[in-house]
Length: 120
Image (cartoon, rainbow, N blue to C red):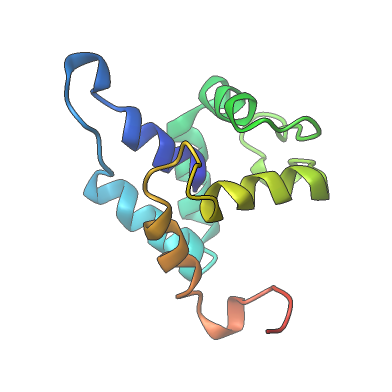
């Protein structure tokens, strides 16, 4: 999600234009996050590509995350430290991600049967 948001934010900056999510990206992100839609996740993974995902992880400061081979995003390995860093991009006002509120809104709308988190 964060890599897609970052790509949308930086799209067109070299031409003096601000970026934004396309309607397709917004639809795929919503499905991936709120319904845990694996097909949407696979499409976004393919759309971004490994080099863009690696670049995002570097910019985010992750150290222990290894992308799954090929299109197998489900085999990505990470650490609690890297996950904390990535979650911090959504909660820290000084984050380089500007569209944090959209991500947090989606995370707040996860369907009840797909909420795999710590209880409140």
